[in-house]
Every structure is written in structure tokens, then in C-alpha cells.
Image: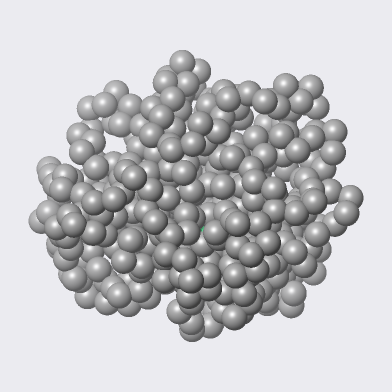
Length: 463
Ligand SMILES: *Cc1c(COP(=O)(O)O)cnc(C)c1O
């Protein structure tokens, strides 16, 4: 199994190299050269298995010779042992044909733990094998950073630097990043938006001198290994609801397009997913693009679902690559256009290909809050604002022919202010996080400036 870049010119890599590299050297994202498929019988056999067993079966065909089956099974077991629910990704029923997939029972209370806990284990294994170390630099709108710091803190072969937009993450998110005491993790509060954080990380990856000097590695949602880990819960949810003998729709609260793209991979592997519905808040570049064919960045408007407050949706490039039939040159041209003009137009053929798979909807702040209120009243399920965006969009896309699964991407206690405003209830933190507000914080404020960031990382990393 080999991985190619969406822009067509970077070296072709095996799984472990694509995992350690993150962004391809031509600026593109790694995707599998071909996508393995499962027979109906193989999918049927997944129903009712433990999450870890489904994870092993779904991921193994993507690994090539990078890790053995036993190594994978061991790392999966370690990754999910700390989850607070035995099903790992339990399904709750909201209505006759509408289900909620709770992805927030990991250590930092967001779905990001599913991928990050696993790649922490895989990084450790691979770096120990080759006796080298890497410097992980990541941008976060809040949840990726806390999940990465939690997954990598104290690991021997890694330094982790996380850039988050100063003053624009929730207090729980910030404290999850600033309170771990291990000196291999570093929280950096950047003077700017999430898109600035993401742009500076991309700049560092494109500065090959710096990249090679510090052994730069990426764990943002562009990392293929993260996407792969997220494919698993589409299989557990769909088979629990009758797949492959009936189709299932999914609605996904979407920002960087990693989580929903994992659903597209599951579909290409043979899981009968009817539609994948993109749910966005008022930062709706993807909804506008699906509707008009024009992908155009606007200013970010801060919302009560901050993990989706982004305009450049990085993993969308992977969907474009498929929609353009694997034409890396065409994708590279669109991305150049985006960089110079802030927009591009998707070709008619590619737009049709995207619309065959994806639907989309956008939810205002008021509708998001009203959905939290209404869902609590009707079902006693407390939704975080991101999950509420998903539920609201899903309700507009229900199809009596198929069950709908909405991904609940974070625990309500991670965004207590919005939940309390909508319901009058203050969602309590789970027991393992009760001391979060008492622990001392450690953070460095940094300017939105590439040279200053590179200097700081050079100084702080362990050689
Ligand atoms: C990261 C995140 C999202 C967006 O996921 P993408 O994979 O970036 O589309 C949605 N909700 C929450 C709570 C998140 O942390």
C-alpha cells in the first residue's frame, strides 16, 4: 500500500512515512494510491464486534508492511483503554430514524482522541524502531491541540508545539493544553485566528531547511493516519444499524473536513452510506461551495462552535482529488489559484461528483442554541454546540428510507457556557477531569510571525 500526494509531484511513500511526514513536500496531502474494498460478508461480520477488533480489521489493509497485525492490535488496545465508555463510540437514539454517535468519551472529550491516541502509539513505535526523534508542530482551533498534547505528553521521542488562537478557545480547551506538566509539550497562544495558526504551520512545512533541521512532523487532521483511525466508527455505527443490508446516512459537524472525509473512505471501501451531510456553522465555505461551485474564503466569524470556525478546509483537497479523477496537476492549479486570489471555481464535472456523495447545510447561532434546548427537552441528551449544528442539519436531511447518524463531536462539558445558556444546566466535567481548574497553567504568547516561531521552536525542543 503506497500513498500519493493530491498535487501529484511529491515522493510516493509507505504508510509509516506518510504518517510521520504529514504534509507532502509539494504542499499536497497524502492519499492511498488505491482504496481497499470489503465484501458484503466481511462488512456483515463486523456487526457486534468490540470496537478494537473492528479497528484492527478496517485499518490493517491500509498499512502495507509498515506495522504488523499484532503491533497494530497492541497499539489499538493501548489507545482506547483510557476511554470512559466500553463501546468507545456508543450510539444513542434521538428519534425514530435519527441516531447520535457519541465520540466524546476519550480523555479530552472530543472525537479527536480516537485518532490522536492511536497515532501517539504508532509514532512511539516507529520512532523507537529507528532511534530518532521528531518535532510535532500543530495548529488547533482547540480540540486537536488538547488531544495531541494528551496523546504525546511524556513520550520519549517527540516534542510537541501547539499553536492556538489566543483568546479564541474555550477555557476547558485552553486548560487541557496548558496544564500538562511534561516538558516535551508546549502550548503557544498565537496572536491571530485559527487560519493564521494553520497557515504558519504550513509555512514551516514548506521551509525545507527548518523542516529537516528539527525533524518536523505533523499531526493535524491532514495526517492520513488520523483520517484512517476515524474511518472505524463509520463501520461500527452503520453495522449496528443494519449495514450492509441497509444503507445509512451520516451528518458530520465539519471544519477541516477530516472527519467527514473518513466517512467517504468508508463508503469507498464498500460501506453502504447513502449520503454524507456536511454541517457547518456561520463559517460556511463548504456549504457555499457545494451550493454554488465557488470555493471562496471570507473572514472568520467567531461562533459558539469554535472548533468549526475556519475558512480554509484543508482536507477538502482530498475530496477534490477524487472528484477530479486523481488529477494532481488540476488540484495543484486550484490551490495556487486559492493562494493568489482567495477563490477558485470547481469544474462542473467535479461538482457533480461531489454532490453525488455530499449534501450540506448551514446553521445560524440562534438555531444552534435552539437545537440544544429542543433536544434536551425532547430526549434528555445534552448536545455540545458542534453536535447541535450537526443535529439541526441532519433534521433537514432525514430520509425515511435510511437511518441517519449524526456525529456528536464533543462532550457538552467542553463548551459549558453555550450549553448553560441554552438549557440552564451547567454540564459537569467527568470525574477524571475534576481538578482541571485547579492545576497551574503554562503557556507562551507568540506573534503571528514565522521567523519568531521557528526560533522559539529551535530553542525549546530537546535535541
Ligand atoms: C475538530 C472538530 C470538528 C471539525 O472536524 P473536522 O474533521 O475538522 O471537520 C467538529 N467538532 C468538534 C468538537 C471538533 O473538535
